[in-house]
Image (cartoon, rainbow, N blue to C red; front, top):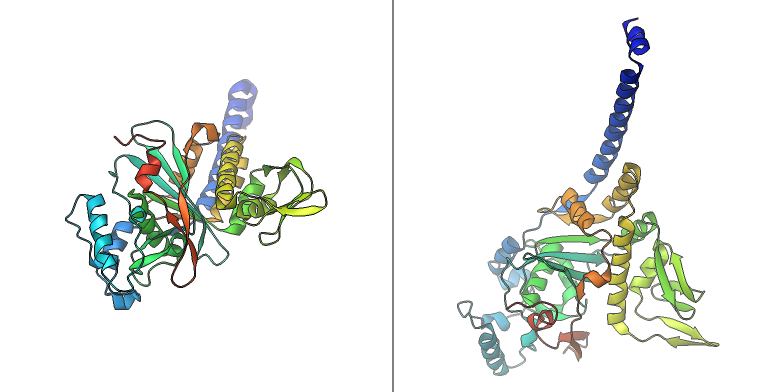
Length: 371
């Protein structure tokens, strides 16, 4: 009875209470949904420094690595990196059947305070090989972000194997002492000279779901295009919005063909064109993220991402989303990008790999002045 009298004599107050209560209830409901989404994210231990120490303290025989390799000659007390690399190369030249040594494959250390670094990894179906490796750098002094794709076949130092291997094999980890994410980060650090602060990886199926929930992406082709190995088939020339499955085939394509007249012809561009496509898709997704319209759409998108992503233990999913939110709507014109110069090389066991043509520091200097 008292409630009825209050509503009759204070209708506006009663309406305000009702509206506030409804909004709070909806807010709590969506907060609960978001909380559920965040709780489903897989988090893995990630401490590259500790993993590096563990690998270095483990006998080679346990790791299955080869003896008499590059770091048997390495002197960590020497601070002139260039001179030290030349000395190592000279020593190796005296060793029968020594592994090939490329001085550009080991990076001069760059002070940890210069960049906040993010390693973004796309994995193949097995989860043990990195199909996409993108390093994003945010200068701590301010300025435009930097992005570079690291070729998966880049032939760099593998601390676990005590030998040079393809970069993407790092995701297999080092048995008992380092996870796949930790070993991959260590290999990236040894090549670039930049410590990896955070890592996130996404699987193929997860990528397709994220593209779908974000509304698809736009793909432009001059002619009908296909790639049997990545299952890509775009039958209509021009620009069109495609779903997650087609977007995945598009970014994975390495053997694309286009129909010119009545003849299918190989599309040039190799891995570097593929890397650009992958980066462009990220920019499109960042643009789509700027279109969050309600807590419900936010929860839906978080749920799709949460089921598909693994983040490192030093980086909560909430922090990862916060970082992504900071860059929502960013365009490729607002990011400094460069490519890794490489040369083709066939190893002694017949594998086709890519040798860095120059140091990462020199590549980076084209877009950022390290002083």
